[in-house]
Image (spheres, rainbow, N blue to C red):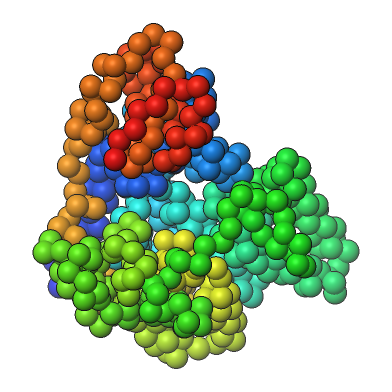
Length: 515
């Protein structure tokens, strides 16, 4: 009788199945949350969902007019993420479905790691969900995760080429072009790293071809032609803004050689905690990445509320979508979101693997990681992790890739260290879920209809008459203005305008003001 199944049933194999079950459970739970829970976070309510609805004519401009500031953002911001969210809403008829774009982006990235580096799906899921920012954004209609996963994909393609000491393939090129286009047309802040990744890829095409046979040069020339033809698509939003507004990053006002390009929004200088504003940008980034920022002594700070655990070294006091703790006076405001202890483990794990399997290829890969880290640390507002989630994603992806590729001839060691990595990742996920009471992990089944019934003032709706033109002014309408649109109340005949507190912008509209 063949006893091999029994012999193969070892504690290591059993633990692997524990990891598989855990990854499946958390992935399905977050999927259910993305499908059934309506997005109630600030940016999602304020402009992601309104922009998505405008793009697909779900709530047209004839029914709802944005405030002047939001209208400028709609005219200039990259809108690919909102376009995809609007598509999901349009196809399903449910605004909750906008959340699926971020979730499916994460799922696609996990499959990418599987296809490119043979990373087990369960290991990738746990390793990525252990990053609080990734975990939280996976079930929302924020666009940060979509663009950052695109940049991480691009960097991992470049990493694969560098450690493999090989030329880019047509697949590499197509994936990279698509990812650069997604990143740049989703979030302006990702443009520099996306361009850097594409430039490194082009260099790998050009320089090896200089001494190559003619046939190779001809093939590489075709690839470069493909890149050139794709550039208008890749840079669609900046080119459109140059054509319409004379500024690739409109509505942001930027200076080029001392000349201010047209724009209405200036770079803010209050997006850092007051206590850290004099700190060099790269140092502030390190403090945020490793979550070393001290907690607040202000009893009114969100990080001091009873429903939050206090933090400590390498663990931020509060984890949330945007790390908002109450204002710039709070030393932990906008800081963290990576799980600093988990980041430290990954860096040590990377150093250990590089030491054990050192080769020129690994050295080149580590040089790429160092370059990405340097550029990220010097980027605008680099301490706000949700803007630059690609860095922790890239770090963890390198570890996952090296476990499967560089150690492919050390099956036993790869299996043991894979289980170790999985154990740490699972522990980190459990800490994230526990510290946040599972509110970013488990569905609450709070629907869009529930939101309308709970938040929107129905007495105001009842006061609208046919042909009414109503201007909503005041703090209660700051993020809720959109949800007074007639399309959500039986397609009644009225028009809504939002002014962000300025009654003088209402024109001839009837003013409804609340404080």
